[in-house]
Length: 158
Ligand SMILES: NC(=O)c1ccc[n+]([C@@H]2O[C@H](COP(=O)([O-])OP(=O)(O)OC[C@H]3O[C@@H](n4cnc5c(N)ncnc54)[C@H](OP(=O)(O)O)[C@@H]3O)[C@@H](O)[C@H]2O)c1
Image 1 (spheres, rainbow, N blue to C red):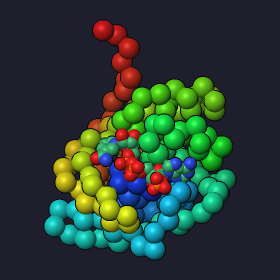
Image 2 (cartoon, rainbow, N blue to C red):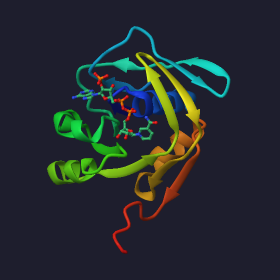
Image 3 (cartoon, protein in one colour):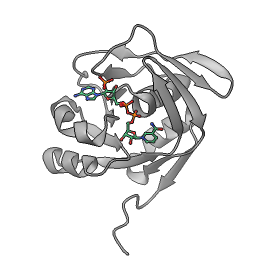
């Protein structure tokens, strides 16, 4: 089972949409809640199905983190099992790894805009994941995401 922290445009809603398409209704911890979540994507409009909770259940295998990088500190105690950090901002995955001892970085290059509980995909990009979380990659791919798996998502050489 999958959990998501942060139900914003990219993380929450886009990832939840792909998980829905793959047959999952993810548990979600978020701050501001809306009555209904919709995604406009490729000329269609789809309801996003999530289970809003205050705390992720212990059977969550992967926690997909989609808060802004500067909010990472505030969600560390909400992570269950393996964290995968979807952020453009820097420092989030390092902080998670430092505090929890495990954490994988991922990148989303889709372009979206959000207005309350409605998100619109304006640019189709990629979801780039490290090979260590192949199960997440396979699931998002099954849900229609454009997924690329790489061996080294954080090259340090120059
Ligand atoms: N927007 C894009 O096109 C785009 C593209 C690629 C990558 N990214 C990256 O993806 C990440 C997420 O972006 P986004 O556009 O999805 O951001 P966003 O719309 O601001 O969503 C962040 C979500 O996290 C929630 N949140 C913040 N602190 C929380 C806490 N302590 N507990 C629970 N939920 C909390 C926010 O709640 P509130 O609604 O209450 O603030 C919001 O639902 C960023 O690092 C961004 O750089 C964005």
